Amino acid sequence: MNSGAYFQNDGPGSNIPVNLDLIPDAVPQAEPLIASANLPYTALGMSFRPDKSATPYHKTGKASWYGKQFQGRKTSSGERYDMFAMTAAHPTLPIPSYARVTNVSNGESVIVRINDRGPFHRSRLMDLSYAAAHRLGYISHGSAEVLVERVFPIEGSDLLATQPPAAQASGDSRYLQLGSFPRLAQAEARLKALLNDSARLHDGKLSIVNNDGIYTIRMGPFQGDGEALAMASSLSLTPVITR
Image (cartoon, rainbow, N blue to C red; front, side, top):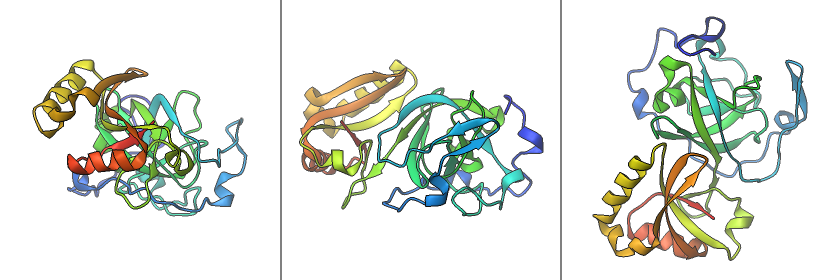
C-alpha cells in the first residue's frame, strides 16, 4: 500500500463507527493453535513456514492495513474479518497469537490478535485491521514503521510478558516495561514523570534501554514474576514483564 493511497480500491468504507478510539486492545489468552492456519504455504511465489512454537518475537518493519475490500471475508483462522476489531495478519507468527505493535513515529501502541496471513510483500512486516491502524495514527498514510513484539499472558494476572510461560517460570531476572517511545526525549520526559510519583522510591531500578531505535523505560531487575508482579501492584502499574 503506497503512502496516502488505498490498495486495489480498498479503504475505510462509509460506515465508520464514531468511537474507534474507544475500541479496546485485544486481551491475550492461552488458545490452542489452529492446525490448518499453521501449515507451510506459498503465496505470490514466496514460501512461508509458520512458527508454531512459543518463541519470543521482536522485529521492526513496515505495517500496512486492510479495510472494506476484505470486510466479512474469511481469514486464515476461519473467522470473518472485522475491520473494527483489534486484529492483524502476519506471514509466520502462530494463529492465534498476540502482539504489541508500536508506531515508531509517535510511540502509540496497541495489542492485536493475529488471526490472518499476509502481507505477502517483502517490504511489509504486518497488516493491521482498520481499527488498529487508526489507534496507531497512520490510516491516512497507508503504512508506518512499527515495532512488533509478541506477548504472552501471565496466569492469574492482567500483566503480559514478552517471554513464553516456560521462560516466565524460570529463575531469570525480570523487568517491568513501563513504556516505549520513538525518541529519547519522550522517554526521558516519561521517566521524569515517573520519578515525580510513587516510583521515585525505586529510581535505582529505573532505566532507559534502546531497542532497535525504540527507547523503552524499564524497572528492575526482579527475581521472578512474583517479585515483579508485587512491584507492579504496589505502584498501580499495568506494564509488560520482560527479561
